[in-house]
Length: 562
Image 1 (cartoon, rainbow, N blue to C red):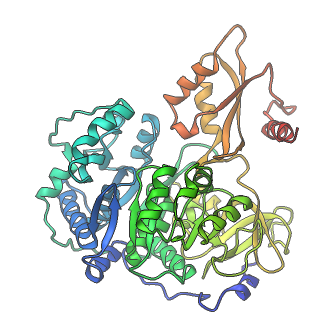
Image 2 (spheres, rainbow, N blue to C red):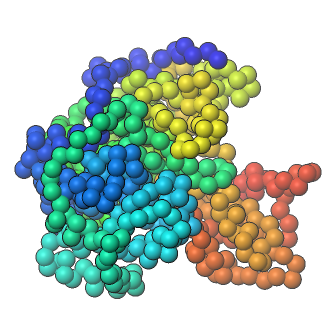
Image 3 (cartoon, one colour):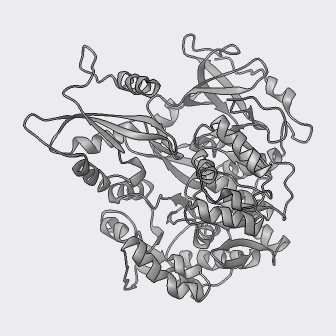
């Protein structure tokens, strides 16, 4: 296959953005140490009234690293982190890296089945989790290699008296009160840190080849796969982001940290970028439009990476006009297509810039983005980042496509993953020579701007989360009343897409939508649970009996036009 690539996009780079970068080959955790030396007394984060300096965050991370070592964690071992956005999430991430471990980010919304698969596949020995999710973890611990679980709560990093009051508020809101008895295998996060030392742990890390992260992503078929991202993959992407946002000033910006750190997008563009450049993070444990509006105004936030649903949520909040959002300078939207009307409305309200980017977990994650200060085109995902080659592979010829010809987006660059964990065949199938095959369809215009035509064939993107129909279908098939099922994504004004399930019941069986919903919630994370159910006598099929998912998609599109 032809590997030489025409790069018309470089003609549109502002002079401030280099076409190639001299990347630093450092372990990812090096940047927290550097920030603690350069900005020791600067606020690294603000969390519900709690503030921590860079020196304090570094000290806590080092203490945790030494305690992880005392629990038997060795270089290369995997440590799972199942936390919402909190100071502990930052401390745990970098603490694990300082211990020489590979981080395994685990979505706190996962149910037991999903947690069990991820722990067994990754071989994690230690997990750090929220007290609210520990009941789920405890149910699967004996089925995995987890030797130690470290538990923390939101209250642990809140200032007094909020820390005293918060457990009562939490119980009222969630109905969950966790009483723990600590032992040799169940540990208190705060107790461990109190006993920890700040001794630097000698490590022999090859940043280019050694893993920093296993980030799990759903597969279009089969269980979730662990994407192997090296220290270099992750540091490269933060450096590319730094150059793309060239007007941002190191040590001075304030970042809204509402994107979850357990998602690679929030991890790179919020947490890792902030640590690298000495920014202050305003950490939000969950997306709450009212609180975010207040926080932007109070803290004069200048950068707000997000997903389209987040910007829609702010724009539709009745109090938006009561808040001064003029501090916002730049926002990069990802995880789902950004509607043009949302972009224009948000820019009108804030006077800042909101642009769309594109990437995947396998690209750490950003590969393409619109220029924040420069030419952009309506509907375009923008231009490839420095040192990133993008090729459109023609489905008809198997060769590079011509401008404006639709094909598969293929990516080559230093941020592209090492491969899938313990899946050499899946890794090989995802590459053609040194090109990563994204599975997304798009095209490049004559000027080098890229456009998405269709997402991966069947994947649903709801609120920035990737949902694969087959996984949902397999769960619904387990219900005794279900004979056939087909799951698709349907338009949703807030989430972009949401999940709809078409059901054919077994003869003589009955089940309600409410019963299916309850059944699904026991097996699936909440964002994967169908919002709509439609019962049918039969589903459209091919001559050989394969369900025609596309027919159902087209029917739903036709309904939207009526």
